[in-house]
Amino acid sequence: MAIKGLKQKIIGITGIIIVFALFMVPALSSAKEIVLPTAYTAKELSKVREWEKTWVGKKIDKSNIDQVAEFMPESYVGLYKNPEKWGGPAEGYYFYIVPYKKYVPTKGMLEAIKKYSPMVKTNPDGTIANYEEIAGFPFPNPKTGWEIACNFEFNTHGDTAHYRRHSPNINPKARTDRVSDQEYWEFFWIHRTEVEPTPKIPKNPKGLHKGYFTHMRLPAEFINTRMYRLRYIAFDKTDDSYLWYSQFRRIRRLSTSQFTDAIDGTDLIYDDEYLWDGKIIRNTYTYKGKKELLCTRHMDMKKTTRQLGQGIVNGLELERCNTLVVDAVSKDPNYIYGKRVWYVDPESYVILWTEIYDELDRFWKCFMNNTCPLPTKQGQEKMFIVGTQFENFQRVHSGLSHQQYFWEPEISDPRFKSDIFTISNLQRTY
Image (tube, rainbow, N blue to C red):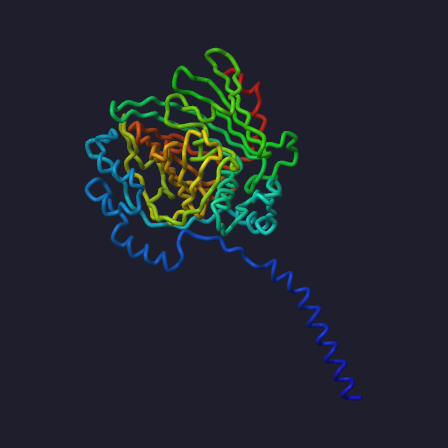
């Protein structure tokens, strides 16, 4: 009897353990943390820190640019070595090297990644089936060019953003500027992580993805001209863009073919916003590996200096970053660019550099995004584009975009509503 009782006790205890284990397995699984990649592993970072002991604080100009050339696009090495060709001042072009600093996404972004990345469902063609239902980076540890492009696509720049952009179009040979001054508003309907409601606006009958509104203040002939562009969630639906040209008091709807037109004599096309602003499905993406580049990732643009006709600013602060390299090739055989090469920040999924080739595979342009974590209205820090340098190496022509120099961007402001994207607002009297 004692043995029988002992067996019953053992069976009872075993049953309790099994039941406990069954309940605990889901808890342990759900508690598993998603580890986001960083620019460097611990071992790689130790080597970077050794290199920084020699280089941090150094002023880099034509006298020593060759010593860090392995971390710069070849075209920009030539630019720094020949500043007089690119409208450089008497002192030439220069930048400073600063230490690498890790960027940690906002609390909202981290929570969205943890919640939604395990829920990603893909179609046979690789596209995301539940595209509008999720937010955060859908692929925390991307393995392909398409997955990196998806992470880039899901960056909402804070869900809302309001900034003013001072953008000289520069002829370095003549040392002249043609300045534009534009006020921008951005709004996202889906993939939202910072401003409630998240992850999407519940009432969205038109199926909108995102939009931006522009009010032009300079040049004089475009004063009070306004434009907005709306992107739809459906991949097969083209963007809507409307322009109010104040001088003629007329509304124009821009056709999709005009998105590749040069913008007002600059070296930019509409697709160049953020260094890519077309529908993600329009390209094929090939992951080419990693490349260490000197990048502006914690840059206060108010520290920079520039004279009239100067092709790039002086005083940038560049840090090493092990970027993700992606070839982006248009599916349209008649597209204006033969290929873009993206150099993507693996911590924020902002494109830090892009090299552009023409349809004959000749090197054409190189653009550099200047970024910095800026405070949001929620008290977080969001990596934001605070400036961009545009260089056309076939025309020897330049352009700049200042998103911070004259006015601090306002990010993740819940007061910003979507009702500005209307024809009546384009025609509003100022």
